[in-house]
Amino acid sequence: MRIPRPFIAFAFLAAFVSAQDLLVRNARLVPVAGPDVAKTDVLIRDGRIAAIGEGLKADLSIPVIDAAGRTVMPAYVLAGTTEGLDRANENMEITPYVSVLDAIDPTRPFFDDSVRDGVYTIHVMPGSRTVIGGAGRVIRPVGRVVEDMTIVPDPSVTFSMVPPQGNRATQMAKLRGALDDAKRYLENKEAAADTRPSGSVKLDLERLAIERRRETMARLLKKQMTAFTYCSEPGDVVRALALAKEYGYQQRLVLGPGTWKAVDLLAAEKQPVIVSPEMETEETDPDTGKPVRRELPAILHAKGVPFALTARPTSLGQRYLWYQAASVVRMGVPRDVALRAVTLTAAESIGLGKTKGSIETGKDGDLLVLSDDPLSGRSWVDVGVIEGKVVYERRTDRRMVEVLGLGDGKN
Image (cartoon, rainbow, N blue to C red):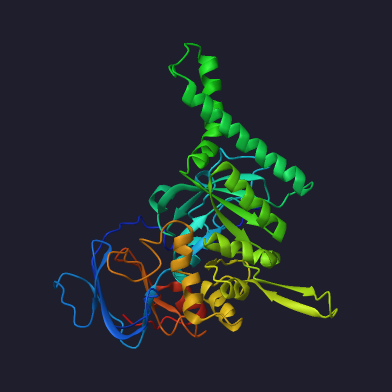
């Protein structure tokens, strides 16, 4: 018997209308890109941040939020997740021709929770239990259909250095085979002078099918897409970096905690990496025989490697990006670095550092009005804003009011 989803899963499915005006007054500002400001205003015009400063003036027609006693910060950015999909991977290991466009379900509770939690830029990717998993998509968590939700279509393709079965040598051979095939396809396509239909329906359909299967990999080699490559051990990092250099494609590494031994290689790359929700591992020290905890974010920070944090919605603590940021602060990572890891560095890792992830003039007006400091453990999103439009108010959130009794957010 099929159990219907709770009504709350549909609470934020209204069609998204962007580019609105808004004035937020009297806020304690955590801009991420600079030092905190004790009291200031933020003006958004046509969806972009137009001005920041005390005593800003605006037309009477512009909505105003009084954030006195509260904190304003940029909306969170989730640099990679498989949540929101009806399934994380296809049955086949090499599927660069598929896209999460066909698997994202806008009615899933994950998107409802993302609106409530203040995660307004989400990079949805196929899972890493694969060789090549297909194209990802950057979306916002509001909209009736995926096209309404989309910020960037098909910016990425999922690679994995970790074999779902077999060994790593076989995994590398499969990756190389797919890349070589794409390389030959590009060379043949460029050499072909006549691309007109042959006149045979069967032949033309077969050629179209082949092109569709190879087009994602061809776009990767032309640097029109970025490979997001999952690595779980140091050797994976070595092989992933060598493969990208050999074939000349752009890459972001998604790291499991066991990759800490490759930190010097990562530091030399001078590129942001993405840390999986499991951020630490326990190993036995070969000299003392005692258990040693390795905390990947702290090790990356010590070597100057910028990193983004991700979340796991199925885990109570790891569901929240603020919790992940607070956890790395406990590891010894500075507060500003931890906040960047869930906002600006996360945006930079998915190619949106110029528009998302911080409160700066000219950037998208995606911001949160919080009841307290974001890392205090006592903070709720009172108001959520995407491109100047209020998409969430805690005081009208029926789930918060009726289930948790927390509908006392201010306007």
